[in-house]
Image (cartoon, rainbow, N blue to C red; front, side, top):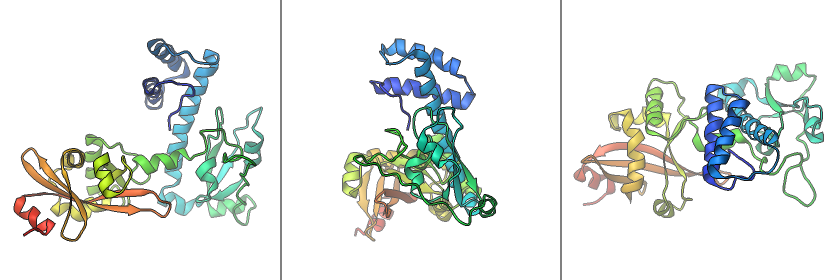
Length: 323
């Protein structure tokens, strides 16, 4: 999530996001961001609340910390890392004027899958500098703990907001990021070049079978037929790439183009086994993509691309069980 409190248009938020992205990628400073801030404010005629220095620092630090937290979560939740470090420790920033709850959680060690982390993975508010560190089983014993601590009571009378968390911060930025954009523990954007790179890397064995990348998102008409929400991602796993490669499209670049093209211009069909698929033409060639819908225990809907191949009308008729 990228947020700018009080921003009154998507265009303003996107301009700020681009500036923060430069800071992440190029190491630009708060002073650089303040120059961008002035330009963006002038371009959009935005009348913001608060003093410029405080406002710019809050936007800059909050979104950098959130992005860092997301990457940190991705590293710590990787299967190999979790096997070695199954516990996570909450660490207070050491601020001179601490939030009482954040200070109370300092040093607490909880299981990595404790529900606490779903809502209270830091940052837990504006200017919150708390962070999380992984803990191994021997490390837990060195801390003098026979097991993880009890999860804090987050109930607050009369509100659904978890205790100690500012509004809009009651979520886990890394978990949200991975669920939307990641092949396993590392994020990959659903654009043509990145998808092709993912396919090439998967074929070289870089990604485990469970790693995946988004290759398209469902549009309203297809989503209604599949009985899923519009915008649900269609995901391609590394295991599918390797297991189906003999039947797949010849070039990795095709994976970046064809799934999205079939969603936008193709036809949703069912094969002879009752499985859903997408079929359509691209550059004079007919293609068929098989998809599978999965509903997770927590209610999330996932769509997986299980095969993608060239075909012709005769072969397609066999696939669909037509005479």
